[in-house]
Image (cartoon, rainbow, N blue to C red; front, side):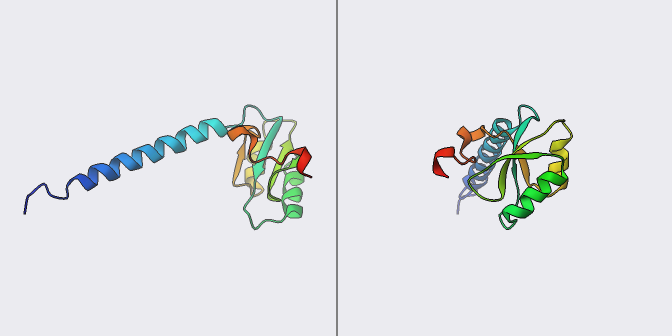
Length: 111
């Protein structure tokens, strides 16, 4: 058996990991909120719409509209502290509501 046989798998795995890490980094940059005035708060999928609303209010935000799921809410905040408070209230992520083409936000026409 050759000493190099099957050795290319490690390089392919490393290249795959690097490609995925690059995509995740780019997605993170795309989704980073541009400000604090309006953000999309993404709560875990098992959080009900009512609990997500209550968490937003507890964080000092105001719900502007619902996203494509009850656990995604577009939130208006009056100060930069609303983002860390949303995280503390249970949001998995707080992103720019128009990131990824606004695909997380429900269109007004579909309601």
